[in-house]
Length: 454
Image (cartoon, rainbow, N blue to C red; front, side, top):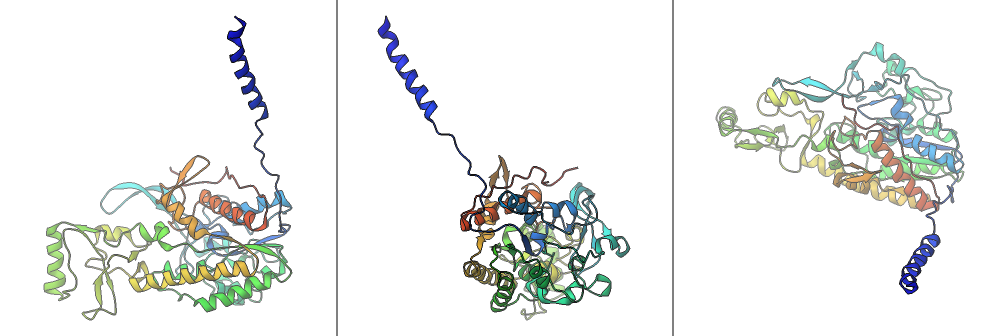
């Protein structure tokens, strides 16, 4: 009888031994590695400023990429991170494209009845008058601001003292004036230099390209690769003169943003009767034989000076319409089909697409080279955005690049929401850890908002 218990007891003993000898999974203690995080600053544009939902507001700033990084840097010797927060916690903030006024509040989801009398959830915002914008335009010069990322600021703006002038004096971008140490005299670069930072988070070049792309190629031309390279040397070279370390980020493909892909170039869907009616107008009455509609999806009409017959043609595959296009006019008033052509401000034609693609490729090569030259970490956000587009999972939650439902982008279709920014922050941390043999924990931003539904 005793022999019947020998094998079970032996197996139980082995299992107990294995269990007791299984090593515990140890998380490494936070460690700064080869970098000094005692004084960090951020330089760049919209994405480091925390701009989202079409505006800059306090909570978005408090949970911006540099602010989230600074909280993790505290675990390895970092200090408090000073930002010029907008003067309210309501989330309204101040938004709008600087070269096109008026100002707007941030977007929120609300119910709207469109021109076809269909009520559905839509991103909504309100106009902010100049008078009501005053609290957001008031400067706070004299403070030691560490987040020097300014919405819509290109690399050229870093050396221009006029960029710090007030809105009332004619400066269409109101954001740097709020923090300029000496408005009209100081520059973004000089204020950044004065911080004497030990670590620099930099995302430069986005606005050089996307100020042009977001305006349908109508805005300021994209600086040449040589110009961008020289400016990057001037900025990074000067800020690292005392041995500061840092991280640079690459620039994503514009096709990874819903702002450029949500409204399809051929979203003009019609019946054969409707197509025949439009063809009669354009071909037989107006004489534009290059314009032709069929039953189903069709390209909208734009101006193109290279077209010999009247300078008009239809959009084709590989061209894009931005999310800023007046959608109600497209639905009900034949905008882009007969009454008004798609304004150049809302469309990227093939030549503009080529210009943007070439610039992103060249800029990313330069950013990669400069990261190596200045011994910076490289956050490959360009590659990461491809992953977002196909779908990723974070903390058990799925994210993708779908507008509203994807969970990553805010309601302007270009800037991430707070959860998206936290995911970006983790990509920066991963790059920093790899480059400097550091062990900075990833952020787990429980207070970061996604898209809020009413």
